[in-house]
Image 1 (cartoon, rainbow, N blue to C red):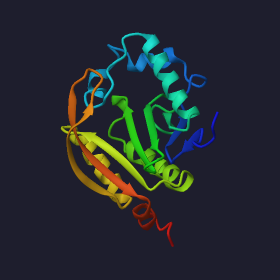
Image 2: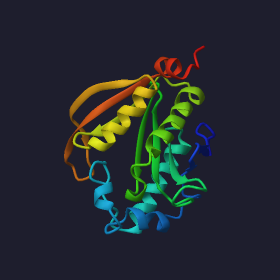
Image 3: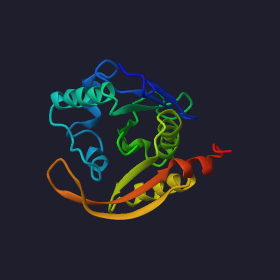
Image 4: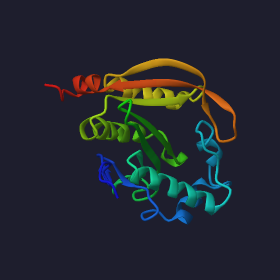
Length: 204
């Protein structure tokens, strides 16, 4: 297994652990991403994946992200709250970082179960993954895209992107292809390495 991406990332309130076929039971994950899971339709309203129809679909997803990690293309993490947090130790959601090495760019993605919304967890894990992208992987930029209409996520992303010196680049029309073949407009946000280091004083 490649060690380009850390197997474990910790923040003040969260633990991010590598999601692979060796570390995640597909049946456990399936309970949260399956059709009929609590609030799954709300969770998937503005993402590119649909609720899973069978455990096999979840197993195939874990195989895909394991291959991406082994090929140094990206990493997916299980996000769990630390002790002291409501729901400590539970699977709160998944977070991913995919890398385009030719462009020296990382793209972030995340989803959380509804009971973990509104806690600021997205910004907290994003700050940690920016450290991975810029300090560990020596990339030039981080990209975050938010589906048009997802105002809660847009607000959250705006907040943590601006806190790290980045900005909203604009609305990209017909940019994202969903699993069902439909297309969506997305807001694109970016943070460059120079912006990140200026905002965090790492460049001094």
